[in-house]
Image (tube, rainbow, N blue to C red; front, side, top):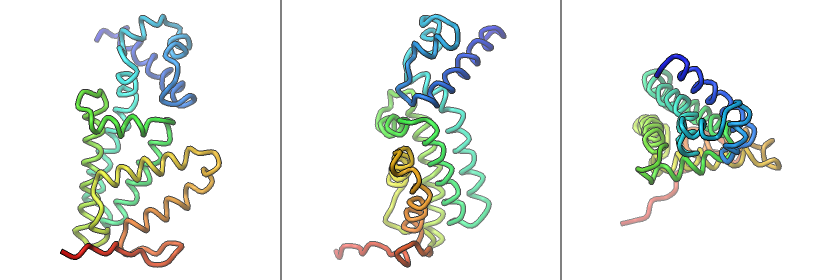
Length: 197
């Protein structure tokens, strides 16, 4: 990419990031182009679909989450590493309102521009969960897909005006339910009884 084209691309991306942070994943592409002082055709030349634009916006953050998970796998205790990553993942998904729905859908759609990044970050979280489970620090009846779903649920709760002030408390409840050695507001976290075979 030529230097001027790269500069234009980065400018569009910076404007798009600001607009999506304000308006959410359904932000107006026309508004992004207007604020970037380019024509809509120029925006579409760089980002042919809304999903392509969101993938470009999210890729850096998702890559950072994946790298953070890899670092946490070798540092800190398994339970602390899992909770730290989970907290950061929830904070990230709250940055762009409505992005969790797109990410959940992308997991099952190999044609989605977001598919590869979402699968990679889910796998990173799954490794942290598996490490905590192997150490006996996390309940064994949850998998990476369910962990990803809990991130989406917590992000949704945090974005609700009437529930936002409860977000930290709800996070602690969910975290204590995932971990086997934590005490939440209701007492010691319990494993669900397994069905008898």
